[in-house]
Image 1 (spheres, helix red, strand yellow):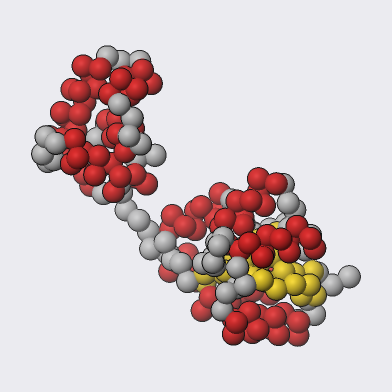
Image 2 (cartoon, rainbow, N blue to C red; image 1 turned 180 degrees about the vertical axis):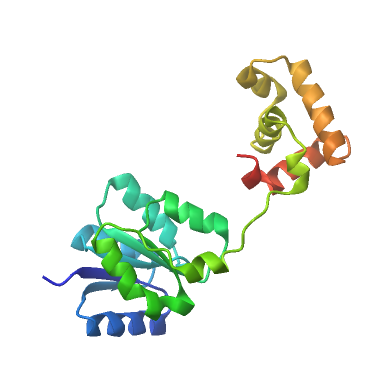
Length: 208
């Protein structure tokens, strides 16, 4: 039997090109979708071997679909197509269990290999991708904070009160306030609560 595939991309030319390319390679394209919601419906209905998903689609993104599939235990193996070169996005895709993450400019060069790898239960992340990823460096200011101070800042970014933070860390409210003072000094922030919460929200991805 030919491997069954669902393709989802909101760009008609990309969708058409991928369908023709894979059909010529003897894959069975069972359905096409123009947004993530349609893709999810088709994956549930057809249970294809492979789903090829554009990362940026209306209603639900490719990663939204991956998250739902993981939550529902769907066995379809997912391959992400993207122009997205941020390391954090790639790592999220890996965490969600995708079998491939391919930059669109290399799609026709890498897609067939990626599909066969996925069918054999192996992931495929091309060398071109790893070279292209924009590695997001931890800001130097955050490196100045102790692990406890990072937790305090992260909690502030989640709008938690000093008492809530104190309870979570099993320390006194007074100690939390001392941590806040030290943090402001290290980060060269003014004494307003808004300055601290603004920093916490801006750099939340580095405070996990």
